[in-house]
Amino acid sequence: MLGVSTTGFAEDHIYQFAFPKLHSSAAERARIHQWIALGKARFKGNIFIPAYGISIENPVSDGTKEDALLKDFSSCQPKACDFNFTINAAQAQQLALYQVEGLGWFLAPRHWNIIEASMGPSGIAALVMFSPDGKQYLSMDDSSACVGCALSSASLFFKTAQQEAKKNEFWFYTGSNVPVNIVHLKTAPYGGQTALYHYQLVSHYPSDGVAKFTGMQADIVNFRRMTVSLNPKDKVLAQAMLNFYLFSH
Image 1 (cartoon, helix red, strand yellow):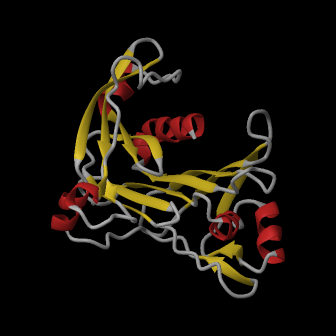
Image 2 (tube, one colour; image 1 turned 180 degrees about the vertical axis):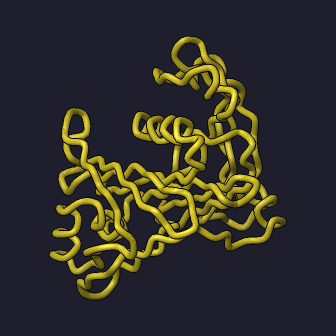
């Protein structure tokens, strides 16, 4: 989840990678996160998988029941959920496609049903989704139009973001509590603004992720990322999830 303070003067920090925790009860999550069946999404080769929209609380609700949740999703008919992306039949049997306001589409194992997601008034959004045993997870966050949030969060992964955060007196990260391997994708269409990363927490499965930073020349300075931590035997499934995020965001 995004929790970066961007006020005050420039200050360097060590980023704390940690296994995510839930902050709400099962009853609260059941009320907030309604799973809405959207139909079937189609991938290359006429591979179909189920698609769902998951509601979250409206951060600018007017207080009415009808306005309390963000759940305005479009059905997958006739071609609203067509993706020029390859997954094989075996992966299709294990995955589902999900959409959350502020975070877009993502793939996750279809038997995972523990989710916590939120959005702030500025549009900044984050989620975490767990396997039934709580040992595997995926997380996503998006800084939306919050420039300070984007620069601070991106500063661990992108030198330009670190420099801009320092120059503009936002928090920035100069390292992390565990070693992180970061590889920047410099070929088109990534141009150095996309990074792949890997780290290992003690007593947990390895974590891999995709981070994207628009750069300062974009109309909206934005940082977004996905992290997945799956049992190594499901490495191919984790790669499919991250590759789809890389493709679709």
